[in-house]
Image 1 (cartoon, rainbow, N blue to C red):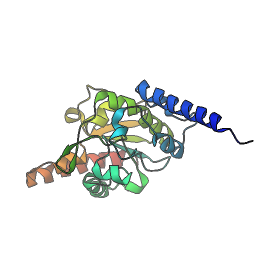
Image 2 (cartoon, rainbow, N blue to C red; image 1 turned 60 degrees about the horizontal axis):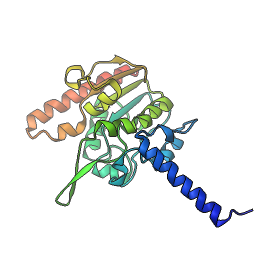
Image 3 (cartoon, rainbow, N blue to C red; image 1 turned 180 degrees about the vertical axis):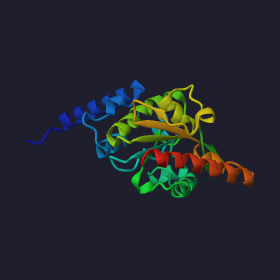
Image 4 (cartoon, rainbow, N blue to C red; image 1 turned 90 degrees about the vertical axis):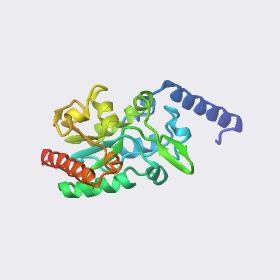
Amino acid sequence: MPRSPAKIARKQSGDVKAEQGRAKSGTAQPLIPPKPTLPALRAAASGCKACDLWKTGTQTVFGEGRPGSKIMFVGEQPGDREDRAGSPFVGPAGLLLDRALSEAGINRAEAYVTNAVKHFKWEPRGKRRIHKKPRASEIEACKPWLEAEIAVVKPRLVVCLGATAAQALLGRTFSVTRQRGELLESKLAGRVMATVHPSSLLRLTDETDRHQQTERFIHDLRIAAQAIK
């Protein structure tokens, strides 16, 4: 028998209140499905309001790849291009990452790529939307999604791209400058390593410096490639 309009209204009201409660909890943990799969996680994350970034982001940008990928790359957050497209690492930094992966002998199609934060945080500058670093509370709110992705994909190696991703997984005292390229034991995956985010290379204005730092980035990725053989 079809439900009455009053029952439908009560259910909708309850759904709204439950969603508001999840948002106020400050963590995405209540949204994680009991038996997560990547499609189920992606569907659940599409409505995440665990922090306020959903209000300004166009959409949730979830990770892409397949279960069983040997290697997972974790960046900070989607950028302007990713926010519009709904896919991670499809902007300028993503193109640089693709080239570097190819140089290092890693097939991106066989990797899982995601971000520590799933919504684009930005501030206006004229007509442009400029990246703004997420707060620790926003990173923590989103962390259950990343932990669930790692648990489902079960990569041999997680590569943190930049300080935000590294500190989200390895602690706030972790220094990419001091420990980049090191293979570290981890409870999250077989091993974890950190290197710079490709966007940091794009910000370098000196061409020689950019070339040298890009080569160093590729060197780090070659270490990762060897680690998953």
